[in-house]
Image (cartoon, rainbow, N blue to C red; front, side, top):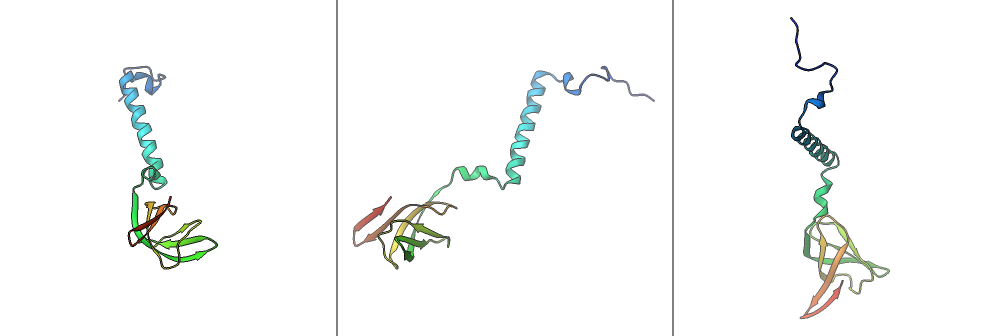
Amino acid sequence: MSYASDSDPDTPLFSRLSGKKMALLVGIVIAGAFFGIQAMFGFPIKDLVRKHVTVEAKVVTKAEGTCVVQASDNEPRGIPHCPYNVGDTLIVTFKQGTAPIEKAELTLRGLQQCIP
């Protein structure tokens, strides 16, 4: 029993594919590699677009002009050159999953003091 092939056995496998099939195969390989790398590193592509979170946070410590606040996610965040005092409640804005505070403001009887 023999298995006969329609083409020469020395012909490379990919030479028999049409241009459209080859382009589809290349696209599938590239997409597979992209998602494989994303899976290995915990899908870092999703970190490119993070949502802004605005919450109230209390100043827990202040040392050398830097205040440390702790928001609802229990991650401490620092505010350099901080004019606030320990115990002040601030409204802070930051990107989800990151430590830097983008904006902090103290609301006190209608007066607002902003730190960009």
